[in-house]
Length: 277
Image (cartoon, rainbow, N blue to C red; front, side, top):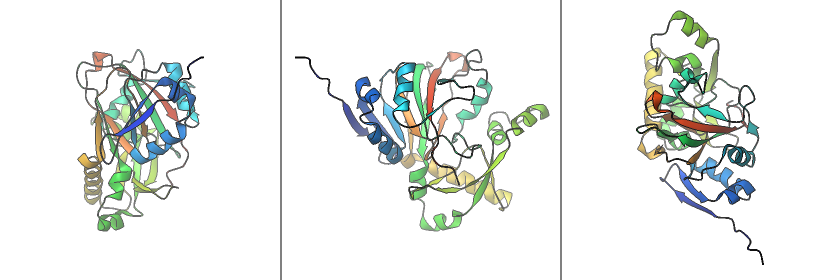
């Protein structure tokens, strides 16, 4: 009699407010039998870690497709190489903004739902990834602060994110960044589920209608709150780790590492399912 392989799927929360490890095998993930549970956990926990699952590119693509609508890259690629090596990624210079807290897609009407990242090559030092739950941070704000920020809107721009790592660009470089435009977004995003999250990060320039100093203090204060210990998790990568995060309810950033280290992460994405508005 042929033995029937049984699905293996265990969950272990990492911190009380963010992050869950999923102990599973490839058979279980690629079969899609736990896809709905994974989707639910993603919204509840923000970050899902699959330790040393070591999916191939084709397997990562297949797994991503079990969870929703697969999002291709700008030129139709299925895998995006996250690396500072310009020979592997011609837009590597733009990735320097990823060393600062951000949400992907603040220049889009509908941000991607989630990203899935697999570690291929790791540096000897650094190169961790920080995450924070903007759902939990919003939910745990004092009631008075919630009332103060409800209804506020913030202007976001790509060029603001680039000033974090290059504060004195040439005019030509600044104009290149500015071609990507600006976007007005709510500071508090009320999702279709009824849950609320904060929309922050390095693309956030200023609160519309607020004096500049007060705007800066508000945005920096909220970021400090959202990225504090109760709502944050730092992932220390091992080869073959796969990490998935809810881009609509978290922020993330890479920690510093040697650009010449060859660090290489392979990313897939899920299409967005609701706009910021």
